[in-house]
Amino acid sequence: MSSQQQPGWNNAGQGGPVAHGPSPYGEPQPYQPYPNGGAVPGGHQPQPMPGPVRAAQVLFFVMSGLGLLGMALAIATDHVEAAGSIFATSLPAFLGLISALRFSKRKPGSRGTATITASLMIIVGLGTLGQGQPAGLILGGVGIAIVILLSQQRSGHWFGRPART
Image (cartoon, rainbow, N blue to C red):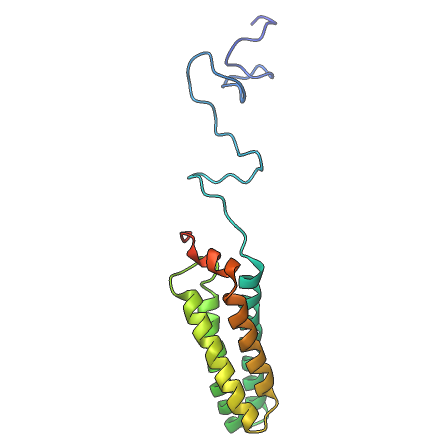
């Protein structure tokens, strides 16, 4: 082999196409990533979930976790009726959790379902607040926050894009 570099050979003298520049043989070049380094075959760039959607998702996670924790504590202290009441109060949060798990894939109807369940959280929160339970204020406030977050324009754009598979 001569000391002169042959076309189609890389700088280390190993066989294979050169990773840059046109090929003298008309062969396609190896896959080159996009300049930002985040190329995905098929042309779609993965987009991060917008802040308002992520915040709504986290609020559903937190409210569901608090409901489960409250039920577990009520059962552990032999307050079964209180556990049932906590379950009934937390039911919209549990339903919202199911739709929140679908946010990342932008499943059809997940935004609408989450908005409806957050509205149910507001109604249940007002009902429990009317019964003199201060936990209703938290439930209603979080429900209002979720409705506001999911009603923002960035949230609408997120759910309006084609879903990832």
